[in-house]
Image (cartoon, rainbow, N blue to C red):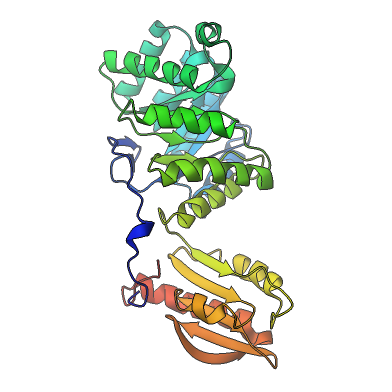
Length: 374
């Protein structure tokens, strides 16, 4: 928007990485940082898994990963891929044959854990299947499943061991002239993961998949992921992310976008700027924000909305948002549009009115009539 000036101090210089394709989604290079999640249904429950994939895609997931632990799951994957609106990554646990079957079933990418899948000969067979079926690969190093020789060498899981594992398996892929791969070095410890990712970023130009594995529940996992992933993204590291939560996969997608939105790296949906509320509030801020978050979930257009309880910070925040509401007195507040005070609105009609104004603004942005606020 014209009222929102360019702020060079907000720019993040992203690490230069080469680009690969996961189905029709570019990862790396100058592509937007993609948001991933993983289904938690039993894969052989084809209808249930497809439904979860579709809900995740509706929430904004660019890529969805599905576990393929056995032959029956590999057969189910073929049907899931057919119905999925987004590329499917097959998560291969221990048996290299599942990787081959998943590639044949139409997976867009194979996630293999080098510490689990076996010797180089078996990895080579998976590479051949991936090449034959136009399938990319993610090398998924995990602190909890490092190779035995690395644990013996380093004594315990550590960033050096994780990076060495990753680089060893990059070499295997490159020795087989396979370059359509990305890599992750995940750990549940934020410090270990962040250090490993920083080391890795300096030693390869492969696209990097970010994640803090086994981060925890919705609250604790969100905070841990925001700290770990947020700092790495701020340094320009990361081409695709997955927030690992013991929660609905849709929540992982929402948190992923909120992390990216907070850093100005990705914009989707309404970014609500709201105060924590206090005795000065002219309306119930907390209940209002809860209601608006639900009522505005269907908006995919990048927009900003300020909901501030009083005039201390309200007008200033509204200057930088597409739509705003600032609490006043006598049961009403001021509606701001494009950063300017527009009209008063009663508190009891305010939620419906804000939803209407946001929808109108979103439609205008989609039609190219106005630009969204940063």
